[in-house]
Image 1: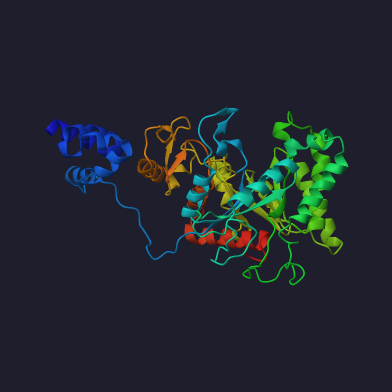
Image 2 (image 1 turned 30 degrees about the horizontal axis):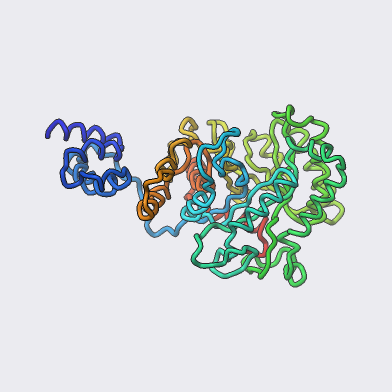
Length: 449
């Protein structure tokens, strides 16, 4: 009817296919009945109807122009240098309450589909590092990103889902530095960190240093790699002194430079509200090592959200890179700051499940890659029904491939970070993604993966 058509037009303009289906299906006999009772099937069956209505009701005069598209551009490739995949949110638990089943496998599948080749899983204590290593062993396919069969992962069966390569870090986050004293043996705890970093180090893996120098051709993959690629997350955080006092943070930040010096692993660094002390310590250790003829490995200041002056401080030091995520892009001022990071110093990350690009952020309008999102309480409710047969479960499972949990950042969102960063810098997102990838491979994966 004309009334139904007018209502459909309003719904179409709101881009709500599900609402459109709910309106139309009861009035169309050939898509009614028990078979179509499942909402994901209604959407599938009515897709042709939706586009037919679109063709009738939408005209060139009222449709927005299409975005320019470069079909010749290769798929973007990403490395997420920092994701907290051991966080309980990926087990369905939020603030101590469980809302849904663990879904890390979906998160990793979505990441791979988006172009993620590698994810570095960040750890903030020795115990978290052990958890991260177990996570890597469980999910890392052990396959070279170029298609070969290298790596440490046990999941080499080609029938298994394809995930990005996974690596991790070892170190103590500034807000967690009380663990040294609380362990009852601070030096013993530090010794365990060093032992773990050495035993599981990417650089000290069998066949690496015995046959190559630490900075040989980054395109050569090795036959065995350890999962630990960095020391961290370590640094200073004066915004959250209620978790760990300033003096304790200062002591153990300085000590963790020793872990990097001994293992030759790069550092993954954290600075919040502490730039003066943070930069002073960083400069002291890097300059001293350079003067002694034994330079420290490179480092990255992750989740950078500082001023242009603070950025310029870091750029005076050799081997210091800048990590950008959603928190680095949340104000007009921060968008101006990231314009000034030299491309050869850029890396990208998500800091998942945190630091997403929100709709209120000034760069949100520059995001092209988007996913449907659902509330954590509702996203998997249909799967929990007992009356679903195996075919129905498979179809519903497939329908959730591109659905994320609302307000939870995931590694796939690194694509959005690159898109905003590229737009404010006036650069091609494909070129920028590749530049960030090359920087990351040079610092963290000098032997390839």
